[in-house]
Length: 455
Image 1: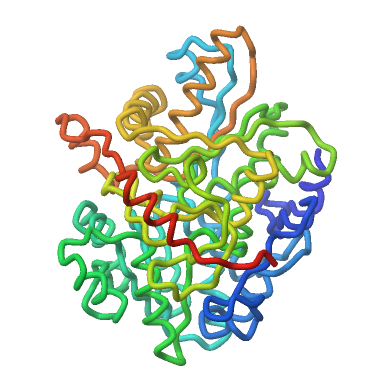
Image 2: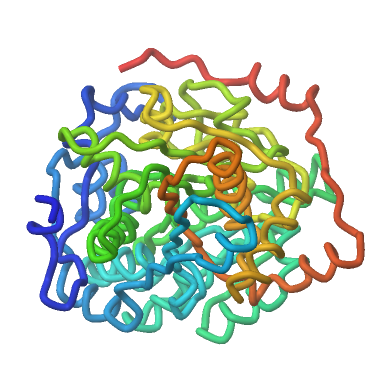
């Protein structure tokens, strides 16, 4: 059994600590900069947005950070999440590969997002916060924070990207059932939303725009904090519970992955499954191939620049070094709404830059085809986002077949598609197509990257 698991495993197999990859990286992450001064940001600069405990986690270099008991008590409702051997998929593909998937769809919100939503709600409540604002793309994050807010008696306000607000009414209904308010973004409620609508009244929105609205709403009230469902270090930290459990479960199966795969939008579910395994590799463990899969029409890792940029459209957030398409980039309205983000988590960007992760991108139809194939074999309809990881897994399994290699493949099935059936209906009806982003708009967005001295 690995040293990692000996340290963090409890008697019920629920980890007692999160894993922080910063402790094992060969170099420290690039400095986060103030959005106005471009100077290194301080905890006081972040205090209007986040609870201090979360800020401390954001800058921590400790390898393990204890999970508070109240958080573990809630997570225990569905964790540890199951790890399955996809034997029927292996048979369908006639591959010698051994395929495993960590299934995060067992959470009440149907995805991995509650892993950090519960933690962030807890820390906000501990600091006396009454209200949390946030954004959501496909609705998985908004659903999860609405769910977590009920446990800590918090008012939740969610700005949902307008195209997803229109495409995914059941996600909206889920949030409202838990008492959250759900607002189509861009909206008339904020100055940043009104500015977008003035330029383009028909704007379908983006995560960058929704973040601007949520941040603006948060800083206007002293009893309010902001919560982010991906990208930042503390969010990725909370998601490592996925990979920590998977290490133990693979050990129980007397196996270890040769390949670890996750879809990437902001980076949280990918980091959750991959970072604990990359950490073992960095500490002298087995070498593994790690694949981050993104949509071809929002290709942050494969087409973006590794540079300083804002996390939102209105330039309200700190400057972070990440792979980015430019904060002004608005991707097409494809169905994997959780992956429609112009940037990538700084830590994910760093491990890609260091060569520990291989990014690749797939078009929408290929991913839906893979999702249907997986569903027919394993009986679970994946979320549109998770289909990207499924597509890469199938591709790798077929490569193993062609090469006659028996490799173990582990991927994160980050959520089910039960709230996304309109997307599958559209796919079955032939209404989906592989949308393309505008090369001209991308070039314009990248040309507008801020100039920031590397810190």
